Length: 259
Ligand code: CAA
Image 1 (tube, rainbow, N blue to C red):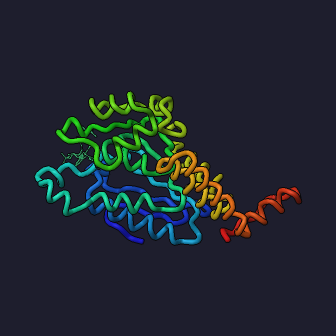
Image 2: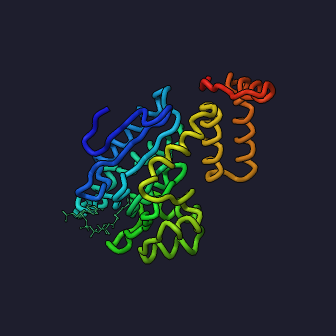
Image 3: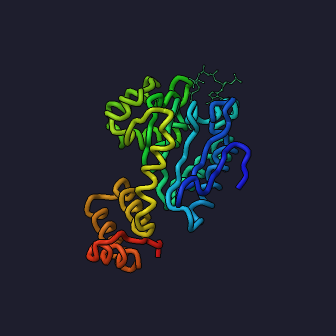
């Protein structure tokens, strides 16, 4: 896969793919083209049987400084409506394999929203998160008022969205926005380690479990419990469930095939 603004390595480690934003002069600003490339890469990796977990990073300097302000500055509401840039985000959300964001430096506006669209966030000690759209006369449009509120609670999200202030990696950790903080130079290695823990498990069970956790945001508790139960039952149709339980009984390591 070759792209202009992202780099893709389909096997950065066993069963782990890496997608790296590569628009350094613009601090990885998420132009329409960048988002289309991310969407196309994730779609291809989701279809690749060798890939079980995807890491999305901006590199060590910056994750992403948000949507491309220069591209949007003169747009009318109808331009925005017609461009329908957020349909790309909806497609990214549909990725069935786990995506881990590895965030170093700024994750602002659409950058913070992109990290939150992922399933987990590993942060370097230099990471800074923010929804500063209010400072340029607009507001978050790719989930910042919704995912952030669900992740860190109303009053904290309200403060970030209404003032545009940034939070540090430590604050993000204490608010429950990120999984952990690691030194910047270890960010990729530690993220690969976390991805590796998931990649050795049953891809079928991982997919169904991700779907069930995400469903918690869109359902009542009772609906979510029914959904979870059905996915749980469905794992029993997989060879991986038979292998996993047989391996436990036989006191050996399981060998999951994703079937
Ligand atoms: N869009 C387009 N270009 C951007 C950009 C963005 N979001 N962020 C930075 N850049 C560009 C700058 O214009 C600059 O380009 P030039 O060299 O051509 O002038 C280059 O990247 C470097 O940026 P700075 O000189 O500003 O770097 P800095 O280190 O002084 O500041 C920063 C870094 C605090 C991240 C600052 O660049 C900044 O505030 N960026 C904008 C952040 C923002 O408001 N993001 C929200 C965007 S709207 C959005 O995301 C809507 C949504 O919900 C989808």
